Image (tube, rainbow, N blue to C red; front, side):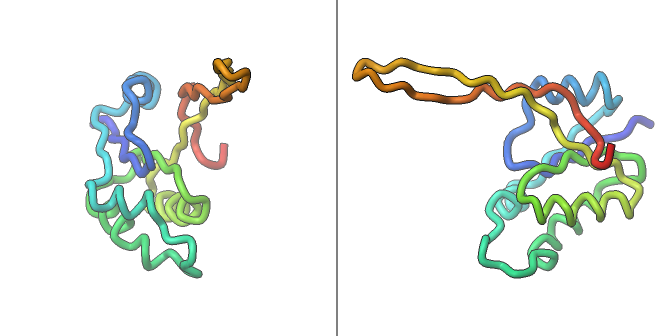
Length: 130
């Protein structure tokens, strides 16, 4: 049976990332966090001294859905990622993150100012620790 990819991620997973997950990770299904957990993950209170308890609903969801060998896309708050990567490794899951290429884009405005932005493009998934 092919592995699944569980997305613990602040954004919607893109079509390019979905294709890459299927083609290169060999997953047959991708599961996003439920909306309530996605809101919890994307808005970790910065004043909390300890976040393991705060993350327990995400940990419980992953533990109840993922099986050994499944992939987990983990990106977001650094401390939360650290906790989730360690949890995934301890459960026999494969934690990954999306590598990207960032290209600067300049827009010259009528008043002579320049607006600088970035185009961010997914390149590949990389295992944590590799």
